[in-house]
Image (cartoon, rainbow, N blue to C red; front, top):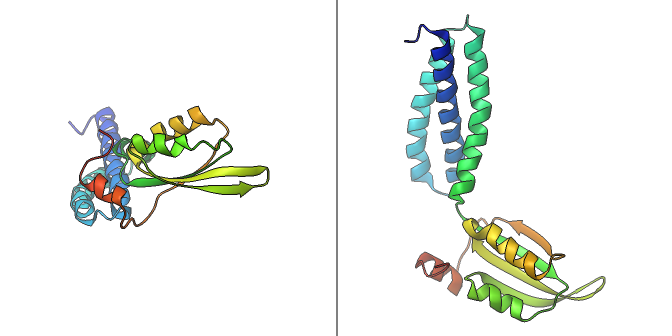
Length: 180
């Protein structure tokens, strides 16, 4: 079966897409502190890697195999990133500054399950409302849409917190009480 060059190219391509997808997910799990899951995934990843690299190294005289390996690597990066987007692991902190000083905005966001701290801020053009919002990443886009519907000109900055400790909101998330 491996004598057919088209089949060999397809196998190398698929192996590398799977390998790099696993690599990407493992790196993200490592960064998110999921060390045991990352370690388990790395065992599968290395087996796939050795199989794909072995096929290429055993057939170095066939340039199409090397090209398939490189193309599979590139596609694997994209596939891995898409998988990570769908998994949306972790939390995101969103800072919002809005000219719409509407006391109902924080209340509306809290009713939708977001952790919100708000305060009055002073900008170049006058008073503003500043909000710091914490949400699971899987609800990030929904949060942006909610904010933009209320104030399309809102200034939004988002980042991933490394550590979250304390507060009622974290306890509620761990008990599965938010976003139902």
